[in-house]
Amino acid sequence: MKREIFVGGVGIGADHPVSIQSMTNTAAQDVESTLKQIRQLKNAGCDIVRVAVPAKAALPAFRTIAARSPLPVIADIHFDASLALGAIENGAHGIRINPGNIGGNEKLKAVVRMAAQSKIPIRIGVNAGSLEKKYQRTGLARPEAMVASLLDKIKFIEDQHFFDLKVSLKSHDVRETVAANRLADRSCPYPLHLGVTEAGTFFSGSIRSALGIGSLLLDGIGNTIRVSLTANPVREIRVARQILAAAGLSRSGVEIISCPTCARTSVDLIPLVAEFEKKIARLQFRGRVRVAIMGCEVNGPGEAGDADVGLAFSRRHGFLFKKGRIVARTDADGGLARLVEMLREMQEEKVHG
Ligand code: SF4
Image 1 (cartoon, rainbow, N blue to C red):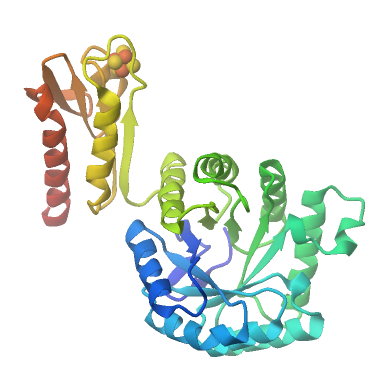
Image 2 (cartoon, rainbow, N blue to C red):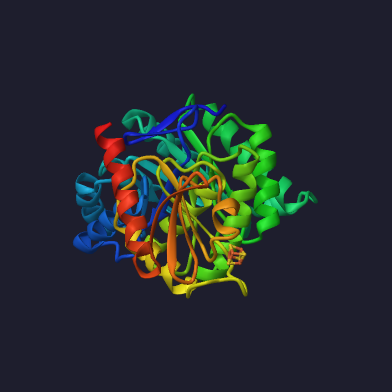
């Protein structure tokens, strides 16, 4: 089990659930747009948000954002230790630095000292693309070189008696990311933040992230995750939640089980499932619910027997089932509405019962 840290009120490591992060992509000095995006991220299920502080001019805006944000805010800093100091002074709930590009050991010491005084954690991020030259020349394979760099930085920071650390090892190469994190998991006691960096567009990036992050989560590795996509950050949260659900780690939400359709399919299932996904996107769920939508009543209820609730179709009817047992019948057109109604009732029971 990893050491426990807190970013604002969000616990990380120990036995805390895996938390979801994203990063705003609004202009650094545009307070209102940034706060609006943070609220959207929160509504989508994000736990912690990262905001880049690219220059000193962004610090006043950062101060307001950190104070008014409904999520804990981590300041993302590169190249300039004074920006890390400024972000901490201006209310960051955590900072993310790459110790290799922060300007040398004395500057790193100053950042660590101020984080300790302000009682906020530091994430040390080592990225394959910006690995320090001396580690590139070691002759080690890249995952090993990344971990060597990380362990040296950890040692230096621990020597300052600072232990509120989280670490990340990212590469755009999925295998490299997985290998480096497996190694780091065995080598250090700090929580791990997982992500495949610069993963790509919504479609390909989601697949690469699911493969990389998912492989590690299935090994029991990882305490926070970020799906990094060339897309609206809110979409990152949707993908992150699906990855957690598929790994059996989600705390709430709907997991949809739907069949791929075949010659037995009795209705136009594909748009029906898409419509269902849209309908439930606005519902807030307490706990996890598995919902099945299947194209025929012959195989449907049996194939989706472990779903909490489901719908299977014949040409004329929709059959609603719970745990594989048929509990109601509607006409085919009314099946979806009844399924959504059943879900609402189940949620009501959870709230009141
Ligand atoms: S559940 Fe029925 S319709 Fe769907 S793929 Fe299986 S056999 Fe075909």
